[in-house]
Image (tube, rainbow, N blue to C red; front, side):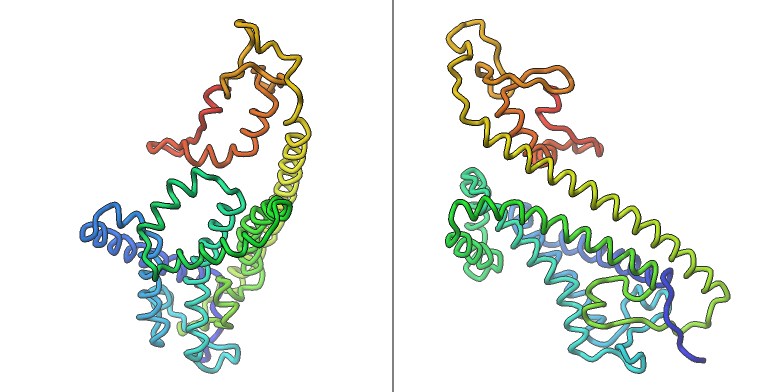
Length: 327
């Protein structure tokens, strides 16, 4: 019986099954480490523990030349670009590296770079110092942070301000690139993961051909077309949001040094800003009708996403910030 390329449904089911078993292994490893080392050390090394769990899962399956549990579940096997033999050990190592290790390093580098460019004293003084104490000299995160600090130290203040939007653009581009890759997969049914595309690993199914295989592929092509249109709309919204953030930042730089000589700060009944609790300077009205200092409300708008992520209700998915309650 000739082997035929796996369709989109089989590849998605295989990936979902692998993700399920990876999450089971992660949870078991996290519980074991939390019991042995305690909650404090587990929180410090949680991301590294998950990385080791993923490396263990793919190391015991893909690196050794065996099927993963998801591949075995749907009956597919990995092949190299020739589609006549299984991938070489080098290709399998490249896949595991791109799938587990590189996303971890990229996330750490972007976080360290963002922290260094922002130059927040609270972030470096509280959380950063605690992480440095918890990390030993052999910690990968410590070496990454040191390299980023050396690189940022060579930049001028003007260059740092110009690089801050670039970090945000890179973070958004990674997510959009992943969505674009999934859209292309729906249309062409080639590679579901970017790591497999980088390693040149595709799949053949070892089960008998399905009669509705062409129908499945047409359905996913339609889904890919809709996903591509949605992606275009998302990119347009992201660009518009980025322009608004840049305009708000420029306006804030323009008006931050306004002289407060016309304000009634000396009067005991002077109106106060409910954000800084001081006399309002250059009063600015929001759509809801509340008045704030221009500098206070523009600074809050620039950091709204970060504040929303901090003040999150643990009981449900509704998020709010302190400024939201005031507004």
